[in-house]
Amino acid sequence: MAIEITDSKELEAWLQDKPKEWSALIAHRVALRVCPLMRTEWLSDRPVERKQGLTLAVLRANLFSEASKTWPTTEINSARGAATAVLSKYSRDGRVFSASALFATLRTADVPAAAKAAAVAADNAADPAPAAVWNSISTDLQLLEDKGLEALRTAPIWHSEQPDWFSTNWIGLKDALLKDNPNWQVWIDFLQRRFLGKRSLFDLASDSEKEIIDAIVKEGEQFWDRDAHVVNADLVARIEERRGAKETFFKDGNEDRVNPEQISEPEAQKSATLRFANDANDQIVIDENASSIGLLSDQAAQERHSEVLRQCNRLVGAFDPNERGANAARELVEDVELYRNSLGTSASEAKPDFLVPRGDALREYYKAQKNKDEFSDLPTLSDKFLLGLDRLIKAHNQYVNLDPQLSARDEGLLGPDATKLLVDPEGGQKVVADAVRTGAANAEIETATAIEAKVAPSNPDPNNRISRRYSEAIKNLARQVLGNALSFARLAWHHKGKVGTAGAGLLGAAKWALAHEAWLLETFANNPGMRKLIEQLLAFLKTLPL
Image 1 (tube, rainbow, N blue to C red):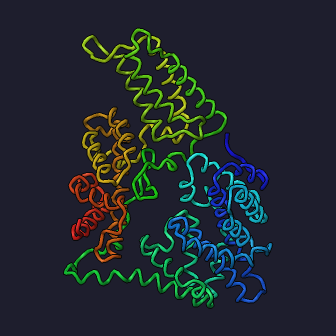
Image 2: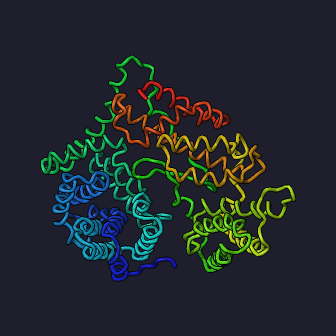
Image 3: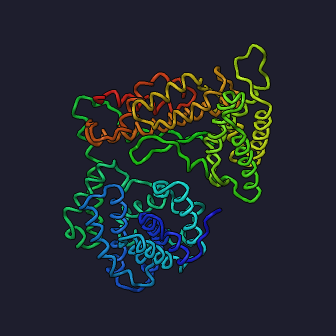
């Protein structure tokens, strides 16, 4: 059942038995949603110094709240506390919604206090737009419960279209800040990345951002106890210094080296098949958030889902390890249990990346049983299990066909390019296994793609939906690995060729890309943009000590 929160009492009650980090993150996201309402301060007749002070206090608190998630050092947490103290003098102003909401996020100590603080923050924020704020909080809680803390941290603050009041005030706030001083742009960019769920603070490599944060922390209040224009100009200078540090990298005799910051990002991953993202350590994992967006969860969809789940339970429950022919049924029952795991307990919890290919595997098994002849070495399945499997597949077909997202995956509707340069399962699995071996990808990816590879034609067929879906899944993985290899290259560029600062995930991606140059160029042969990226990226990586 979907989570629906309508007031602060319900929110506090829901969070009482959850980790305090959940409460802090909910309150922080509430604060971000109402940050544009600082525009009301800039529209007031208060002294400009007051407006600048409030704005900088809110932004400073946001900065260290974000930094402490990535680098929870004692020094950064202390800086977070100092930001709280400064913000507290504004938090009691009822008109300053973002300040009062954010203040609540920064002073949480234990679970009850954290839950209370989140509820207070939500109440402060809900004044100007209750429906939008409570709906977004409900969606946040659902994502937390379904996917966990990291999934919510990297999710946009609005799960659907931004409300008009948010967009109007955000445009107005940006105009007011830039009219005051152009260097507010550095904070506008910072907030925009927060709104989109981006990890980067200043759009720099992680270690460059850490250098800036550490330097500011070391200076303490001396950095902040200056005119807002001076603080902003100083911050801009530090960021630009990190961006310019790469120029000395050309003094090593590679004057014609390609600048990786000028290399275009890989094209977007295709939907309707497996998609991938990075975990906190920049190792590639399956992006289950992307696959579950848009699934139907109304009453009719829930009933179809329940029927599939009922047929799964019925078939698994019929298994008796002591009955005759149990060995033949055991493999089927194990496959059904895997399929059932991908269903979840409700329609909103289904995992399409696993549900669709595992459903295909059951279809292929049923077809093989029905078509087996006397020369087949496939174990004979009893009529009881054949009938149970038939019922399950029919329920699966109805469930999948009537959900647009699942149907698109099932039919392999991936656009015209998906019929070109398909990936053969044997070669594809070698590529995936190597991505796991180098540390670029998590082992779960090899398990997931193996399900598709098992039922895909050994000779890729553009007219076969499983061939198309499998091929685009492997290409999606390649797109993600290339994106990580590009991040590695940019990190090396910032450090003048030193690669020891990169994490294992990015380093593995770079090594994988170098090892699979021929495969990459062949796989994306009909894509000029991707070929250019591959050629430029690999040319740069070959100059590094890998």
